[in-house]
Length: 220
Image (tube, rainbow, N blue to C red; front, side, top):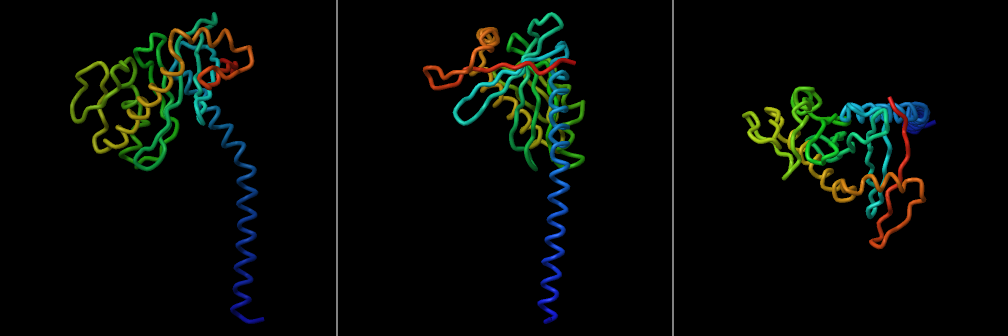
């Protein structure tokens, strides 16, 4: 056999074997990865809604997007607030944030960074408690803001991370965008109504939007 052809054949065989092995590993690992992500998401809900002992999942179809809100409840079943995930681009990639909002829809209970691939030592500091803890109790109106190189001066402000303004800005923008969507589709005065109607099948309303659906997802 021609040496070049033999070399090419060997490369094809090695490539095929490597691809098969990688596919097998991914097939086995993917369910574990997804289960771990689900576990982290559930834990984050209780981090941003510390008074919650359980939660209910509300879903609403808006265009091509499905909005998901987690309503936290205490041991007696009374609502204590809502949580939702805020996704959006950062400096290096997607930044996913679990956001907790009080029942008054005025202040954040807190946040938890779930997904980020920001620069080590700089942007990835958004996952540090020192940054995340700033969001506890801040006001969401007119919107959450960040300021640089000085302490917050207003109740809706947090301080950005020095050297990582883009990542800090991305977190704030993601939160504000998600708040706008959630407050528009799950208004405070209608939240209880959504839960009461949850047992009924979802149906399209006059505006073509699907009514929210509810499911229980287990407590602590």
